[in-house]
Amino acid sequence: MQNYFALFQLPQQFELDLTQLDSQYRKLQAEVHPDKFVSASPAERMHSMQMATLANEAYQTLKHPTARARYLLQLQGITTDEENNTAMPADFLMAQMEWREAIDDAKYSKDIAALDTLLKDMRTQAKALQQQVATEIETAPTLAALTVRKLRFIDKVSEDVNQLIAQLED
Image (cartoon, rainbow, N blue to C red; front, side):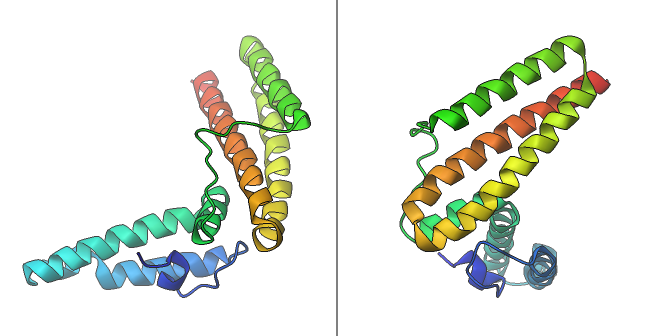
């Protein structure tokens, strides 16, 4: 399996220049897009399809901070085990409960402004955790796995809030 960072000629690190990632992605897609290989041999068409698929998967992984952190840990042989390991520190569990209560309150009162405020708070938390995970990947990868699990939770709750806002706006 090709390293996603190498595929886009980017340094293998958490902090990425997303503009450069976008540029490298577009450049690679232009080179390997299946439409360019319509009249090529079956083997070349298959290779083009595989490369385009790999480019899409790599781009989506590196574009999103949580997925990027997870991938960097996987490269080190560390799994985040997000599906099975849901243990979290008490303070984070309390924050989760507070967010869920705030979501329920805003849903009941149809308060989109409160949901926007909640999203802003979660983005702030996520940014702090992203800075933390960037350091942990280099210095304490096993701790980074917990931070990735926290980020995944925030991502999920943020998606729920965005869906609720869309429902309330309709």
